[in-house]
Amino acid sequence: MIIGALALQGDFREHLAVVSRLGHQPVEVRTPEELAAVDALVIPGGESTTMGRLASLYGLIDPLRHRIDEGMAVLGTCAGMILLAAATTGPDQPQLGTLDVVVERNAFGRQVDSFEADLDVAGFDAPVHAVFIRAPWIHKVGAAVEVLSSVPDPATGEPRPVFVRQGNVVATSFHPELTGDDRIHGMLIDLMEAT
Ligand code: GLN
Image 1 (cartoon, rainbow, N blue to C red):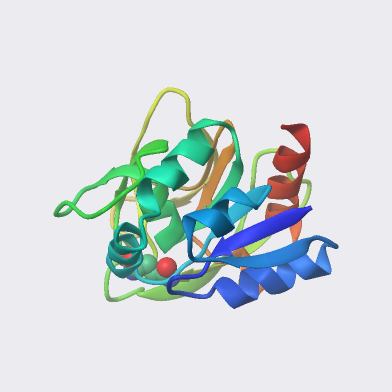
Image 2: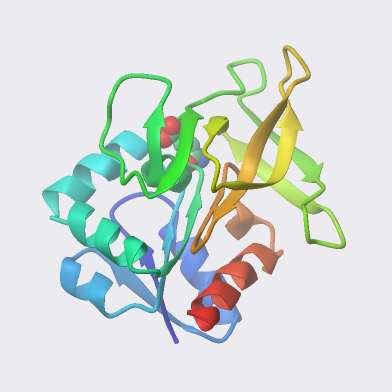
């Protein structure tokens, strides 16, 4: 099947390499026409304000919302998670609002800007090695959102969700495209095949 990656900014090429490895057809998505042709979509990491602005400029915000509301499987990683979310704890920026969470951008702070951790994930039998790069965490989850993994807040020890699912929408604060572990993209494919 055809799996797109939103290719406005960020590390979409790494995601498309995973798509090829899993035996599906990778496509770069920059226009509403290209979006209409995909069976599932990855929204990559990068810089969420830039990606959101470009998505508005390219006329992609409403078509993205529409396809996701209709049930297209989507995986958002890091900035992609921020774009999918309803709001951030900071100033307004373009967002799709198709994932009922409030995210805190760059949440792990300067001291631990980027780090790696092994995460236990609900439904996975072995941990996921997760790479966090100026990552968000989820500040608030809506009732329909399933938290699949959290990490302790470095300041308070409180669990902060970093991997969630709401129906056809999967989102991670970290970068599964960088570690050669294809289980999270596999989830996207399973969701795509189930719809
Ligand atoms: N810090 C970026 C943002 O807020 C996200 C970083 C990433 O995607 N690796 O948009």
